[in-house]
Amino acid sequence: MHDYLFVKEVIPAEIKQDSILNIRTNNVTAYTHGFHKYPAKFIPHIPKWAINKYLAGQKNKTILDPFCGSGTTLAEGILAGHNVIGIDIDPLSCLIAKVKTTNVNTAELNKVSNWLAKGVKKKKRGEFKPECETIGHWFPKETINKLSIIRTLINQIPERFGNNKSIKDIQHLLIICFSSIIRRVSYADNESQKTYVSHTHIKTPEEPLSLFLLQLDLFKERIAKFPENIPKLRNRIICSSSTESLKVKLKGQHINLAITSPPYIKAIDYIYNQMVELFWIGDLFGIQTQSKQNEKKKEYIGTKHFHKKEFVKYTPFETTIGIKKLDNKIQKVFKTDKINGHKHAYITFKYFVGMENHFAEISKCLDKGRHYIMVVGDSSVSNIFFYTANFLTEIAERNGFRITNKWGYKIKNRYMRFDRNGRGGIIDIDWVLDLVRV
Ligand SMILES: C[S@@+](CC[C@H](N)C(=O)[O-])C[C@H]1O[C@@H](n2cnc3c(N)ncnc32)[C@H](O)[C@@H]1O
Image 1 (cartoon, helix red, strand yellow):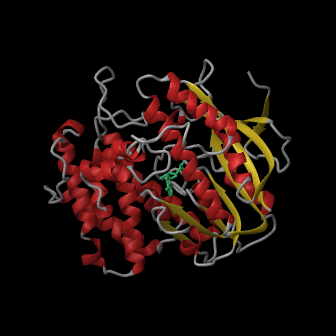
Image 2 (image 1 turned 180 degrees about the horizontal axis):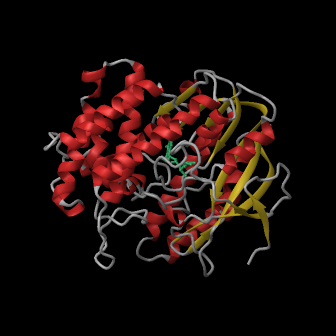
């Protein structure tokens, strides 16, 4: 058990090393934060804390989140009056992040959404067909037609209202609004990180047309608050794999503060999580079918999806990371898990190599004295506990960073509870590493 430091809504700038906060909040979905579910989303309070601490009283600085996910950092950055850059490999996350940080013209949005609302009530059949043979397993028949009607109308927007940037932004907002209801109108369990139909908890899917229209009202109300709060600020979202260096992606742009929560080891399969949504909007990213989705999974840091031939020759005794305690742990996974040890050891090794490459790259993009705030959770692999936060600190320190503080906070979101249990119990702490470029 920990001695928690109770905090209400606002995290104090100075926090004693190794403290664990219990943050009381009922405000995690304010502004555009609640637009779309995303696994391992962090609470907006974390980026807000970092921005207040390191960019206090300043405006128009540039904040980077190199694993931006659904854009929590980016939305907070914009709200605080800064320019933001987000990078992620996951195309749906990038679109969510873009929509959450993009002003739209209220009059145009009203015009398009009124037309759409009329259309969904009037239209009898949709032309859009998901490329999924098992679609009937995931959705009631009537729902499939109703979702098809919405998607067909959203597709018609440029033809009807023009193909300029401001209409495209509105179309993107409507796509994300559409995507945000899909899990709820499917048979798949609403709360689970994995997309599956439970046969023990039979679910009654919600009615799609009324839910979509309700959600549309919420999106309109929330996005309208953005222009009131912010002048013209830049958001740049880069949806990209790791093949291109960070420096090239950033085009030499100076970063004043970086804030992120990187992937966890082996824990989250983002594509699997988004499976029902991708049946309906995956065509926009070229991942509408399950086989395309399976290929995409291989690109994520922390993934457990790769070909066997990639690791047949790997052993953790010959190929090491060079951090004794970490190498010992990976060797333990290899030796003690008789069934999956080889694969799990490789997954873990590959995760830390991926993160080391990341630190090497980001250290080239941050000037001396700039801070990099990273939120990470420890995990267990094959029942062996990994102090991921400490290992990542060591890796960061051999790549041009110094740790200035480390504190934790209690995770309350059930959507975040995956297999982190080492030593007899769920580990529900995330660590905040405050690194500085030296
Ligand atoms: C913990 S999530 C970030 C969540 C985010 N903080 C939020 O609030 O939504 C980690 C992200 O890392 C991304 N990711 C995994 N591998 C990546 C890679 N090679 N390059 C860029 N992003 C990657 C995942 O797609 C995921 O969105």
